[in-house]
Image 1: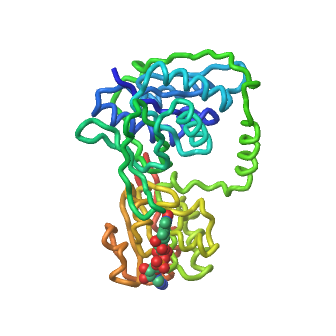
Image 2: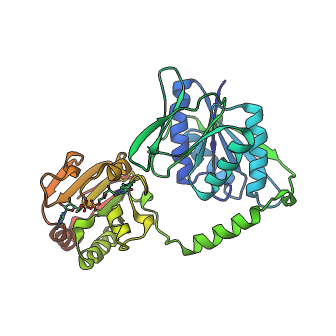
Image 3: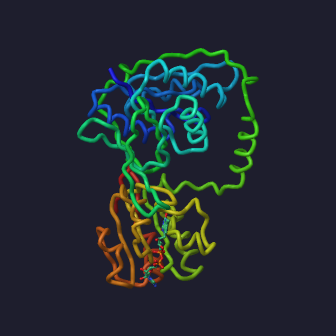
Length: 343
Ligand SMILES: Cc1cc2nc3c(=O)[nH]c(=O)nc-3n(C[C@H](O)[C@H](O)[C@H](O)COP(=O)(O)OP(=O)(O)OC[C@H]3O[C@@H](n4cnc5c(N)ncnc54)[C@H](O)[C@@H]3O)c2cc1C
């Protein structure tokens, strides 16, 4: 039976939400192509506790790398390349983390496989070929890319681009295989430098992950002043939401890139997405195609965002933020099992 590989990051838990997103997509593709989903992971202290979760999201088989010392990028890569040569999966899906990008890039060279990076979706066409969807030509078009002749096709998928989907399965049927390995770190070739640089970068990055929030307020240039932006942050904190932004605010140096939604930012899938003073350029919209309910506030009735929104408010975003902030204690917005509702 054909296989689809999902590669979890060796430095994260196997049931990290990004891996669950990849599994959700792999399970959908496996159903359509009569394939098995194989999850490749490091065996860490959380491994046993995570098996059931990954089974629910799509893992039919788990290969766990066991090593006496903590699993490193080089060990992971070597074991994985052996496994890919042996099983010849049709498709190998990596996360778009630094780890996923680094390992997929190196493996695509080692194994001479095509790699389509930064995808927002993967589909099967009528002839059963994998088609990788991503932006191209400086993000001005959405491209559908097919690997040509390679037997194994690799991809990295953007975090937040794939909605989570749980399966109705018996998690005990998932097969777990340990891959004991004795590869030595001395195999490293310049990799230490990469890891050190990564650590420094991580310290500097603001610890915010807009792709996890169920309610997301997105600030666009129409927000206009710092006072309104500060109030939006206060409102978000009050109700357990997060603040994202359009690229304009990043280009203007007002917000950090980690909060940008869109083609050159993050793809998000919150239950509720408030676009405040956002015009709705296509490069922005592509990042919210998996959002649940979209509410747009804009003073211009012809703003493109309104043709994408479920609920349109023609008003001054600053006034709407102030009103929501004043009413938010009475609103009592609560989260329950991923749902957001009012009472
Ligand atoms: C290669 C490339 C990649 C890009 N990637 C991204 C991306 O990832 N994400 C992204 O967002 N953009 C991206 N862009 C930029 C994108 O094309 C738009 O320029 C950008 O999204 C516009 O941001 P905005 O809507 O905040 O600002 P504007 O286009 O300036 O729109 C501001 C909106 O606010 C409204 N407004 C004004 N005052 C008020 C008020 N008081 N109350 C309510 N509404 C008000 C206006 O009517 C207007 O609709 C990219 C562009 C390129 C070329």
